[in-house]
Length: 540
Image 1 (cartoon, rainbow, N blue to C red):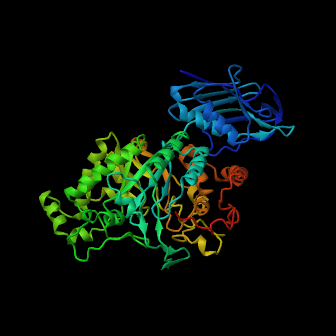
Image 2: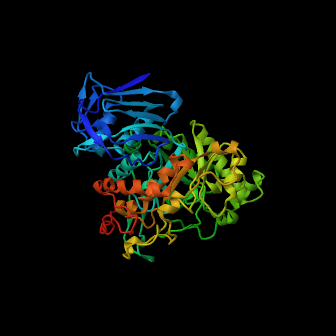
């Protein structure tokens, strides 16, 4: 099967090109011939009328300031499919007269186009051009993700789209969307309307800059089903899969507030509410048949909203067992099922839910606490607790897949080093000095992993918890430029990583972030690109 894309210019040769591309993440193989004419973009790009990839290519070129038009013939660029490159691999050959791109599939073609956009330079006449070059590229890891927490503070769809645009540029392919938690349920479930009517509303929040003081202002909001579908499709068009997270059995205060019968109603002092402070809270789902029927209904609807996601994330982390210990009903479930302790009860709970997910042809994924009490052989585990280095090795030895998200390197809500503004709006959850250099130093495959198990490490992901991130500018300040360092960790062969070379390419990429008004942390002095941007908070 061949893809034909025509053409990037009208045959105008460029003057000699002296600059080299600054592609992030660095390709697996890149050869550039400087001092020779490149491929001129001065007159714009002609795309084939009616072609499958024309709409996507047109968007990418225009977003980068390159004019486009449609043509029925006269292609300068030939897109071909080469299955040997894999789903996300590609090759590019640029000469003064043509651009040839081979890809293993549509995603590979998108990544090739993004690499071309980061290769645009000026020729000897000051006109935009592509240097003469050859690229052969494919990702090191299949999972290259960012996690967005909409429970503590949620962003409107327009801001999520900006995030997806930036993810596409740096070849991320997974957006993990955290949609339910103690502080708010943001996910529309038609069968249970009180989840959003009551569970999406908290009476107040901690003051950012003074976390022990309540702000006295109600906070509410949730996404509609149409908005969810809009985000999912927008992401898909950019080669990104959206994976939803529904937290269980803990982090369930909002759901239990909406439907109290889902909680451990037989414990002393049972009085759930949507939580108004951050941290870990005690309310867990009751392990009863009523709860499991509710969760099956929820999962049925979630699978309809996210049809292309191969996974449903169930959280599984930070689930205190105190309420189960106090609950006669929970203790009876343990007795009836021969469970020795509450950790085994959690494993029983999660395995019940996994069967509901598997029924839809999807797989369960959860945080590394899902192995407490016994890890299902078919579950995928996200390793976040860096102080438990054996958790990943234990899962790999059992044959489970893992995604590395260690809080030592990839918790982007952590402080990112010196130079942070003193304004209270720049408060962070801790002062861990997680610089982009530390992110870049990450090796996702745990030390000591046997060679035959390395393929079970699917990739890596940064998590962005939003207790102290109320709006997009603050989110951007936390994520960039660290996301660019992660992009290279997840994509580029380990032996090609070079921090000094990456810094040079990063410096050349900053004008793009400036042009897109991304409020990144400046790598050298820590100042934000838009110092007043985080002061104005958005509430829904």
